[in-house]
Structure formats: C-alpha cells, structure tokens
Image 1 (cartoon, rainbow, N blue to C red):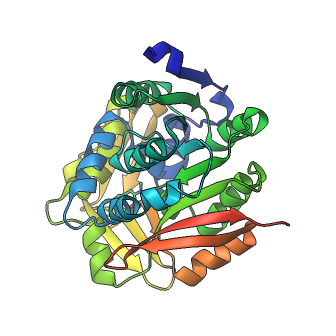
Image 2 (cartoon, rainbow, N blue to C red):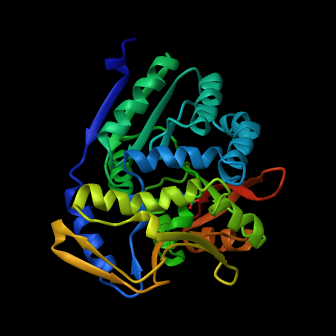
Image 3 (cartoon, rainbow, N blue to C red):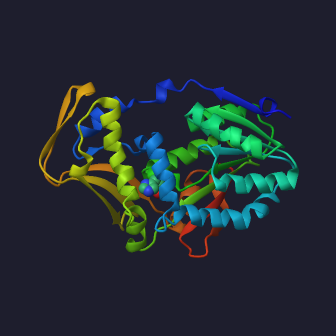
Length: 330
Ligand code: AVI
C-alpha cells in the first residue's frame, strides 16, 4: 500500500496552549531567580545537540532504556492477542520506538502507530522514514498537546492502546505537575490500556553530575544554545561565552538542577522585547530540572494517579527503569 493510504495527520488547534518565546523569556528573565523554561531547548540546533547528548558516554539514560526495550520488546508484544494501537507522546524516529514496532509487527502482522507531538513537520518527517521501513505499519499522527491528542483517540479507537512516554521526560516536570499529568493520562485510558513509562532512578551524585555536565561540553553547548536562540529570534545580544554552565544534584529533592552562571556583571539587551536585563557576577539563569525517582516513589506515583505497576524492568547497571502502568478501578 502507498504511503498516502497508510498515513494520516490530524492537526488540533493548539495555539491557545502555546505561550510564545517572547512572553516566557520576558517573564523568566525579569523574575528572581532568573529562568528560561527547558522546552525552549528544542529548536533545530538544540534538537541536533540533544541527539549528540544521547550518544555521550556519560549520558547513560538513552542506552539504558534501549537495552531494556531490546530485551523486553517481544515479551511486551506477546501480552496482546490482537493488534494494538501504539501511542507515543513525542514523535518516534528513535531506535527505542522501532524496537517495539518491530516486535509488535512480528507478533500481529499489522500495527497502528499514533505519535502525538506539537510539531506537524516533525511528525511528517519521522513518519515518512517509518513508512519506508515498515510496509505493514499504519500511522495516524496527531499534532496536538499530549492530552488533547489522547482525548481524540479515546473517542474513536477500539484497539487496546499501549501509550509510550519514554526518555525520562517525566523528570523535567516538577513532581506535583508530573502527578497531575499522569492522572490526566489515566482519565483518557480504558481498563485494557497500558502506559509504558521510562523513568531515570535516583543514584550517586557523581554519575548524575557527569551525565548532565559532560567532559566534552556538549550539554553546556545545549544550554548556551538557549541564549543564542534568544539572540536569533528576539534580537538579543547575549555573549554566551560570558556564561558558565553548571549541573548540580540536589540529593534531598532527587533533582539535577541545570543553570547558566554569569561570569561578570553585565547587561544584555533584547531588542524585540525592548528590555535590558542586568546580571550580577555569579548570578544564575535556571534552565532545567531533571527529577530522579526511587522505586518507592514510582510505586507511589502510580498509586496516587490511578495505576498499579504491573511490571518493571531495570538495565543491567540498575540505573534506569521502564515501568508498565495498568489502570486500577477508582
Ligand atoms: C529530555 N530530558 C528528559 C533530558 C533530561 O535528561 O532531563 C534533557 C537533558 N538535559 C540535559 N541532558 C539531557
């Protein structure tokens, strides 16, 4: 069958949810302490640098998750007697998604893959590649916020759904926000549906700080790209060389805090906002939280959001977890 017959893209109206870079940069850089939300990392340059991060020796998360999925994909696929809908939050050009697609196609002969992502162009690009590679795959992409997209499938899908939320993306949400988000996913799920969640685990400081501040400076470049993006898109005059990058593990909170630190007193002008931002020497801009979970914290998260952990797998080094959440009656 042609690509056209196997591909559809629904675009839901998402404008109302998207705050612009301009609004959030103005808010974040006039706040105390200063901050820039981490979702702005991912312009074209930032997305490329993130791919480099995933290959770094220190950034074990991607490899650990792939190892688990490689070992368990068949076992996961065998849980289902019938073809399912594989729903992914984020768009899956990645090896990890392919491991599951391979196993599900092998088991059932056909598969409906439903990536949900805010960017229609990212969805189209990754879909074309997948359709080339898998002749029995159907892709029903949805360009939307995750919850709106899930709501859309809830209404018209009779397949059991396996929802993937991989990469420990949950770690970039504050814990109460993560709880709310997982509860909102639960609200869109039927009893036979499952949520497969990749979550990085709490562990010793050195491993974590190396993972988030690598020796080649790739993660530093990823963070400084935020400043360069503001230069490009909002006419600012940040000198990214006048900032240092640091990643610090807060053991009590289980949170790797990423920040840029001003090397000196300086003033930055942002033309498009008609704004001057003053930095004192050593003043920081908070760029990202990466929360880590203990197994007990994952159990508690499942419990308070209407799930039970039906299965859980760790990598050989026990650094990372993939968790299969099953809805419980409430
Ligand atoms: C996308 N997210 C889960 C990554 C993380 O581990 O927090 C982003 C990242 N930041 C620095 N390195 C990777």
